[in-house]
Image 1 (tube, rainbow, N blue to C red):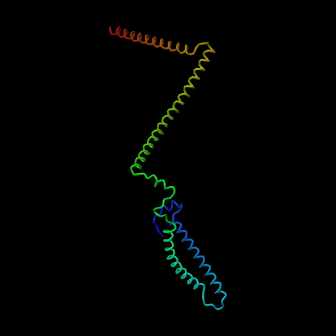
Image 2 (image 1 turned 90 degrees about the vertical axis):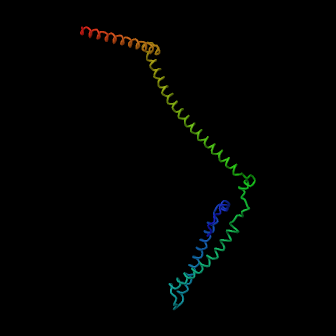
Image 3 (image 1 turned 120 degrees about the vertical axis):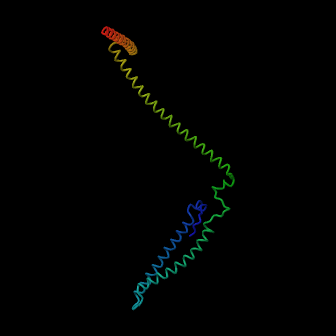
Length: 213
């Protein structure tokens, strides 16, 4: 069996010529074995009907096996010739023949330099695509963070609205004014605490000095 790669023929026939020939060989072999099996069964039936025949079934089987070996050897020699003929004359595409889908290459041949240029352009476009995909992922992540922040802000605004409603219901006080008043009071309290702390330190210092005298 020929092992020469026949890629162009495979592209045209959509199967490898060697595989086709191998299937033909197996089919012929199977048919040959079946025929000899039938012939052997016919001979055995004839022998059983003959009176006082000195031929046994084992001798018939040995003769059939010997004949099969001879026929198989002749068949292999003939099949090799048939294979050579098929691969050269039937399943072979001449080197000067182009398939219809490849004729455009004959009309518009490309040089190696042009191919290299197209290859570099393809690489550049691929790099740009990857960069844009990464930037898109980054933007999507930022948008997701903004959605989270907006959701939290909406919760805070809802809370403020609830507080403002409660304040109005119980004292008719504006929530913004209330927070301003609380901030102002807090500053005054901080100042008072600082004054008390200074007075306490001064008083402690005076007591210490008197004890020293």
